[in-house]
Length: 123
Image (tube, rainbow, N blue to C red; front, side, top):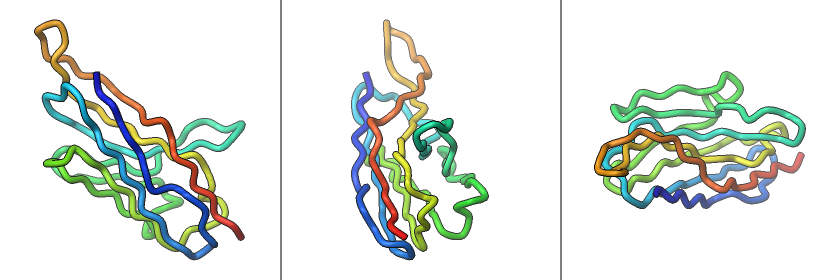
């Protein structure tokens, strides 16, 4: 099993900054992509940013230039640095990790989600 522990959410004024962290642990053989998604009530979960194992990144248009995703492979941790936060960034932010794990004597690829961390931006 793989466990994801998120931290760094909270309440911030518009224009402020937050840094989210997500640490993966468990029977991990390797990690492929890592990413952050967000969801507001009544809407589908949407991709915010993703980073591959070789460091290639992808961002939602709404956060380009404001958010930066990074990862520390030695710590199996992904970060999301958020600056110039806007009211519309308010959402529960979820970490997602695609990992290869040892299960039943074979290497399998599975997707795992964190429990979510609330980001609230006051206008």
